[in-house]
Length: 364
Image 1: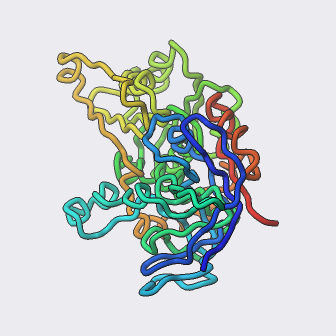
Image 2: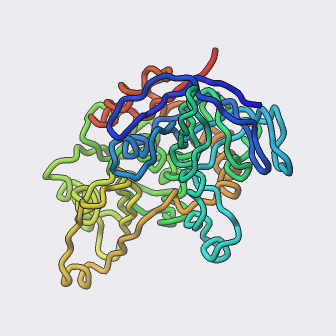
């Protein structure tokens, strides 16, 4: 048995998606089929499509999704048909060395699903799922460990952004950087993840949350989500951040662009002894330079941040409590609601640094 759905299929690197029929197998042992309600358009999808990140073709991209379980395979006990769930693009095996060290975000097998075809085109051509999810489709089939039940009281229509943008941004602040009340934070890049970092820093009690972007149009949204200050990303940035922080620089800087130049800007905007957390996914050949003296003298910490150092099963319930209380706003980050046909325009907005999160909606 199988199910045929509409999907945005990317045939090769750099090619725009085509809306095509996708044949999904029924879920096998340990798998579930999820009817997608909405899928966020993440910069990582753009990076997969243009070759910055490796991807096998043809593929259905999209990894930030939420929907309803339609069917479960043999042995699945954690979710049942009819249950709302969030996709987890980096499901931990709970058995490898990293998982046993309490670092499930670094699981050796988290992306195993992305390496294998999961569906077919009508002519039998195998299709791969972007980051193991394939959310730019009416439905997908994933391992049961790649879904997390949606907590009660969360609007399913915007829950998709929890699966990547919010988990990554909230986790970067709370798990990776461990921002404390009274500290200062500067956030470079205000897409969906960056806006989540802004909200999380505010919730963590940061006295100042300095939002930075190339687009002045993002100031109003950033301030509405908790930014105390807004700066344009230009050659005066370091001086401007120091002017807002007693001439020291910020305690924490979050790079949410994926650019060596922006990593360097984040480093320069941070105080001696401060922490730079690199959240953005950059290119393999985009190198950052530091001299040996400044690494010693500045005493700063430079750290990477994979998926917000998060454990979705642990963190989503905590984040959901902030959503229910009104402290964390999901819908406000969504600046464009689109259909599958609107994906090329959504990718172009990301290239140009426009808007917050684009959200693909399915059905009524």
